[in-house]
Length: 324
Image 1 (cartoon, rainbow, N blue to C red):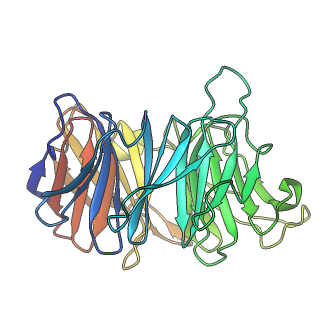
Image 2 (cartoon, one colour):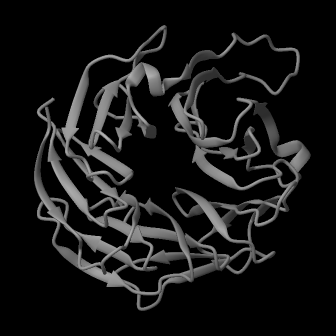
Image 3 (tube, one colour):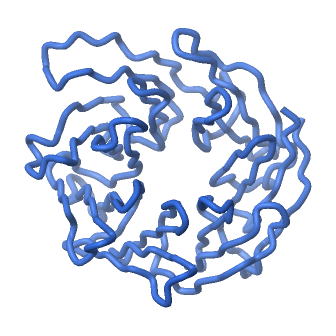
């Protein structure tokens, strides 16, 4: 069982939700909140190091890009926050749609946009080069019809970008290709709005839907429609299996098996279960984080070695000793 060893509101006002966490290459942590503030804090003490109020009009997402952090907002802007720079580098969606997801790789930032209307939306997957931020390097407008909820670059094929959407599709783009028809390499259809997705291995992708359906899919080795792929591994609705109310995320660890994090508001618990390995995917060893964030939703989780940091809708960040 894990033990909470520190907790802080980082100076945020009462009733602030903390949405997301990210860690820079020097182990500095960051979080964004419903008060539109970006907060940097120390990973060991949870001491606030820097705050950037009004970082967006409606901050929505946060990622790390090595030594600096990247945020996106419903104001249609992407901003890079480097403590060494006097001003944040800024990029904009040409259509002024809100930014709903981010992924970072070296000098490149991928941004997904938000649909604000009922029915089919006008959304984009954008790729920027921070060395020339005036306009997107790539702009894919036809592959999704609803809010982009997840973006991730492939762990080894660095030209491959994955996007997940509330339209129920997962798309894979070769960002070396400017034309969208040429760039689109594969599409997965988990048949439900995507909550989170990512790469478990070079040829495996996990998907968790907004109704807590969990599945693992094999990627094609070519863009050929004739390639025969094994059917996805379907875990179904994991709420009953894991005795939870919601899934926070799946985390791929460099020094251990991937884990799935899930919470139960009424029981005030957060749990982390190992996911096994290719060919033997299963819910394995579990660690409970008792008390979690009370009866509020845990919004994000980071794991480093034998410690975890969480943030939630109670406006707190918490540091845990996992004892794993």
